[in-house]
Amino acid sequence: MDRQSNNSSTVFTMSKCATGGSLVFFPDFGGNVLYAKPIVQKLSNDVNCYGIRLKPDMIENLENLSLIDAAARFARDIAEANLPEPINVCGFSFAGYFAFETAHWLSKSHAIFCRLFILDTTIRSKNIQSRLLQSPLQELLYAIRYLGSNWRRLISRNIDPMMLHKYGQIGFDLNRHPESYRHIIRQMYKMMSTYNPREWKTGSAIVLKAGQNNKIWRYGNGDLGWDKFIHGSVTTHNVPGDHLSMLRDPDCASVLANILGNLIGAKRKGVENAQFN
Image (cartoon, rainbow, N blue to C red):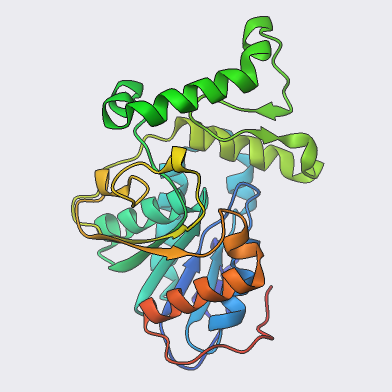
């Protein structure tokens, strides 16, 4: 039995191949890795794909976990799973923060080198003064937009528990999501809103960003702000589509998977009927 099949591990197998390293995907706001399906389908013959899921003990304690705490658990489980090397960790949007912090923990606490892939995730300082100094126009435009969308709620102080929208974060309407997911989404949102990124002095990353991204969120020198927190090399690649279509649109997703495959050294294109558990 594979060590990663341990019932207490957050690591689970998405596809297996005879050769190749590992590609590990991290959970989104709902706690799943469904966004990775087109990538797994494309690369299943070239790399072993794994997902990270929240185990029941984590779900029960989510309100007490920080994003960095959760990443420490993910790193421990990856280290104990003895995955085929080289190990590549990957996260899309919110999951990019998990990928970043897990890669940091793997390097710092487990002496495991892994390549970090961040899919269209913007990172910014929590300090408003720092953001104003870094990108005053973008911050001003965002503030105007935020106030325009939330001024009634802010004046009346009538907080709708189903609406999640803190300054500096994306808005989330829980009414649009199944009731069974709402607790996880609420706690994941709390993790994101209180997350204070650490600097990774020895790290490096590859950022794949949507070609049609909103310019308001383009902080840093085109790398979505990651060079402010990662002191090693940060390289970027453009992917067609916007933040959602880069993975939802089959053509855009195919381009993204091909770029990712070339970067991790995959020599063949995976079959289209990969198992997705």
